[in-house]
Image (cartoon, rainbow, N blue to C red; front, top):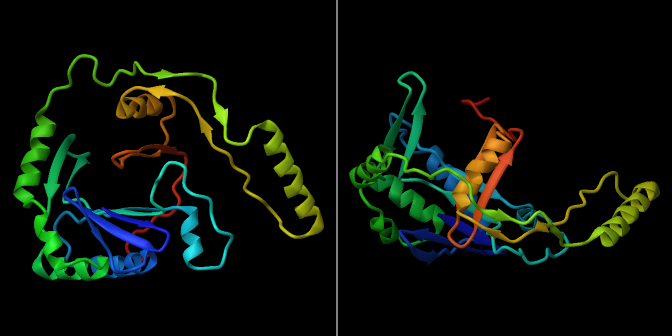
Length: 238
C-alpha cells in the first residue's frame, strides 16, 4: 500500500512502513510505467488507486490546503497480491494470486523509492490463494450482513447554515464580478456512529445500489463509497 501526504511518501508492506525517497507525484508516474511494462499474467493484475483534490498542489501553486480532518492520505495506491473475482459464466467466485517476478520486484522497488529487500516480505502466491479459498468456503453465520448500528439522525455541519450561506453569497459576488464562473462549496457532515463498518456498507448498498461502489479499510479509517457514475474507463488504448 502506497501513501502520500504533502511531499512525503511511504509504503506499507505486510504491516511494516518503509519511507520512500521520492515525492508522491514521482512515485505515481514511475509506478504506472513499471506496471505498464510488466508481463501480464493470464488473469491480469488489478491496481487500485485514489487521489485527493489536494494532490493538485504538487503540480501548480495553490492556496495551502487545510489539514485533512480524518487523516486520510492524499495519494493512495494498492497492488493486491491476491484477489477474488466473480465469473458470470460459471456463476462462482474465483480466487487468484500472482507472485512478483525478480524483474518486476526490482522495477517496483525503484518506482516506489524503497529498498528491494522490502518486497521480500510478501507472502507467496500459493499462501495467499489458500487463504482466499478458506474465506470463500466460510458459510455466512446468522446475523452477518444485518445492520444493527446506531446512526443518530441529527447531522452536524462543519460550517453551519449561516457560514455556508455567507460563502454562497461571496461566490455569487465573484461570479457577477467575472472573477470566477463556478464554485464548489462543500462542508462536512458528521454524526456519532456505532456499528461494524462493513455491515454499514452492506446496508448502504441496499438503500443506494450505486453502480460504482467501494469499501476501503485503511486501518484507522474506513471509507464507504457509493458513486452514481464512472469517472474514467479504459479499454486497451481507448
